[in-house]
Image (cartoon, rainbow, N blue to C red; front, side, top):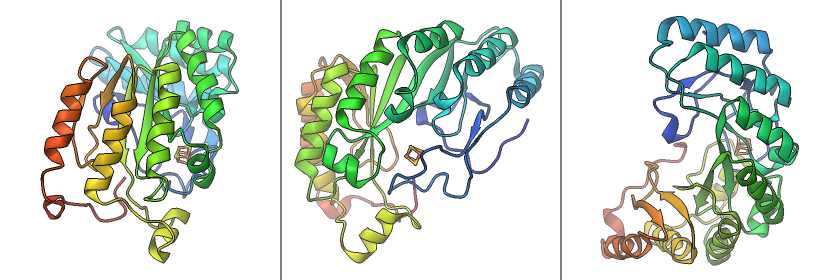
Length: 290
Ligand code: SF4
């Protein structure tokens, strides 16, 4: 089994077998992202991926219940090739319940509804998608590669294909300047297709990225802990659901999770209580933690 470079995976894939299907990210232009800067993007051959699956099957065959296929935007693989490795994995791991990949709206747009249905039949059960913001101005500034309207269109398509969708929102990515628009527009976009999971994490500048340079020059202003919690609160207060919300990233100042809409009031009350804690009691990690 081989793994190239640093491992990046969603928190919910901590127990999953990780088999790289792609190396790097085909976009690799988001101004805040330093994950794959050192990698030239390529799709691994199906033969190599199957070889790794076979080897993992020999060691862990009876124990693996979920597989995540890094790196960034593996959904870009040709549909028949991705379906091939998904079907192969099903043969090797009898306890398998879930197979997942990363896929942003830019690359989901390349798949038709029929192709997504085919992938679901092959075993693709969830797509992790970095939306970051629903505000077009923020999306443009961070060079995300898609608009809010494209996010909605592709989110609806994934839902129609009956593949679970996990959307990631980056708290503070609009800076102080766009905090209101970032919250309200993100909620509007999420309410348009209600992903199964909404995960929030707090932006932390990563050295070497364009946004880090803006932060160092004072062009981009980080939210304070209270401002970040208020932004999270405004977002959640506008969500209609149904979705499962998770604020479980170690960079977040307020760990709150629950069902939207059922737990919404409870979550908002918790955030209000956390906001009574003085700002100097919150610990902000050093830049560089993702
Ligand atoms: S945030 Fe995602 S899409 Fe953007 S460069 Fe990083 S891995 Fe690629």
